[in-house]
Image 1 (cartoon, helix red, strand yellow):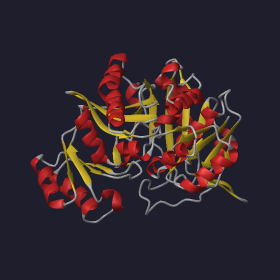
Image 2: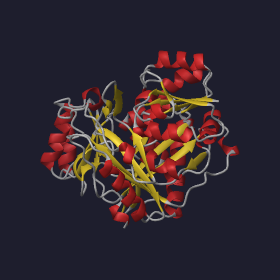
Image 3: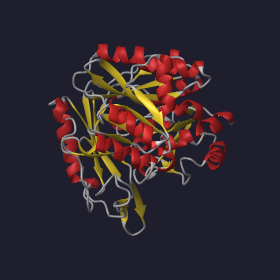
Image 4: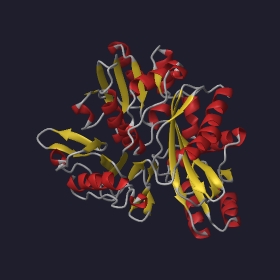
Length: 423
C-alpha cells in the first residue's frame, strides 16, 4: 500500500523511517516533510493543516494509510476530512484531539474519568487567577489552554513568578489565542514519565515508556521547549508502573472519550509525574511525542504499519502485543541558538557533519531544508535529533552525544545531560 505521513518534524522523519521498513508498504509520502524525509520518501509540498489539498492528494494517489504526525493536523480536522473521504487514518478526529488542543477540556475529562491529576482552576480574567496562585504561595504551573508547540507551560516558584506568567498570557497575549484561557494548577514534584499507547477507540496497547527533557539547558535550567532529548526505557520504571498507567490513566481516558462520542484512533500520549502521592497526569497529547517518538520507534521490533492500520480500522484486538528491542535508546536534540525564543532565533545556516556520523547513530531531521547551491541548511529551532541504541543507557548515551557533537552549524547547542540520571 501507499502510506502518507503528515508533518515535517523529527517525529515525522522517525515515522517515515519506520514505515519504509514495513513489508506492507509500496511507497511512502511525507507532507510537507523536511531535508531528511526526502531521502527515504517523496516530500509533498502541502502544509500539515491544509485539509483540502491533502484530501485531494490522498484521493489522487489512492493512499492506503494516513499517519497524522503533528497536533496542528489533528486540530485542523485532518482526520475528520480524510475519514469522511474513506481513508484509513492513524490519528484522531478533531473532537477527540481536544484532549491535547484544550488543557481545560483535558482536565474536565480527567475529573469525569477519575484520572489522577493536579488540583486546578480555569481562568480568562487575570485577577482571580492571581488570587488562586497567591493562595498556594505561587507554587503553581500556568498553562495556555490551547496549542503552543510544547512551550505554553510556565512552572512557577513564587507569587511574583506566577503573576508574571499569568500576565504574560492573559494581559500581554504572548501566546495569542492559545493563551486567552489558562489553566493554573498546583505545582507537583517528582520525575516525569511519558507513556504512549496505540488505540482503536476500544482496545489500548501501551508502547515502551520514555522520559523527555523539556528545559533548554543542562541541569533542567532555562525555558520550556518542545523537548531537548529523551531516552527509553527510563530508570526506575517497571511493569507495575506501566500497568498502573494503563489501568488508571490511558484506558479511562479512551473510554471517557468514546462515551462522549469522540472515539480516539491513533496514539494517545500521557505525560505523567511520579509524585510521593502516586502517579499524576500532567497532560495528554493526541499524537506521538517529539522527541519520544525518536527513541520509542527504534526499539519497536513489530511492524508499525500493521499496528497503525489495525488501529485505523478498529481491529487492534486481532494484533499481538508489540515486541521490543531490549536495548536502550537515547536521543539528543541539536537546536538553533536562542531556541525556543522565536524572536531571537535565526535560521538558514549550512549544516555540516551529518555524513560523518559515528557508527550506530541515526539522525532524524526536524528544522532542515535543502537550498540550491548551499545544500542542507537550518530551518527551525530543533534542527536534528541524534539517536543511538546500546546494551546500556550509558552506551546509548555516549553514542548519541558523539553524534550530536558531530552536527555543526552556527549557534548549534544541545544538552549534555540527557539520560545522565540513569547512569
